[in-house]
Amino acid sequence: MKLFGLLAIGAGLISAAPITSDISIPSISELTTRQAGSACFVIGNAVLPKETLDFVNQLRPRITCNNNRRTLSNVPDATSGGVSFSSINFATSSQAPLQFALNIFATPTPLRSANLAQFQRQLDVYIATEAGIRSVNGNLAIKVPKFFLQFQISRIQTAQGNPPQAAGSQVNHLLEKVLKNSPRESQLHEQVRALARTLA
Image (cartoon, rainbow, N blue to C red):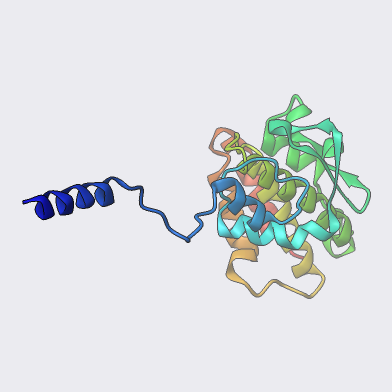
């Protein structure tokens, strides 16, 4: 009986002992840091979608941040090649996002004469800022001008003889993205459709 009692006590101690493991489970913050590397514009802990993360990794080498100037969702002002987000921030305009994009990101005639590199720099800072907003689960109204910039770049590339091959980067696909994300500005949709038909 004494032996049985000792065994029972021993079993109780074993069952009460905490279960430990050598496996370390990273926190969401650690995951985000690992995913985003040292990207200065990713300020939050929300795990980024893969597509956004891919953009972050591409942009990290060419984006700088001004931590003394904050923009949407407290994201630092992102700069690419001399273009700062704060200088083309749709949210500081009195215009709605699509109207702002049509005015500020207009292309010249002929379309092939557009400065593709400048449009790309503008898109860089929009994508960087969007990634920062996503990292804090902020409002994504930025998608309208961002998609419009991607749409314009696709048009320029097509006019310059280098149409994008990836389906997601082609003019008609991006046209639908712009229209879908701007239902409150449907009165401007025909202007965007007309641009999609002008590829030279």
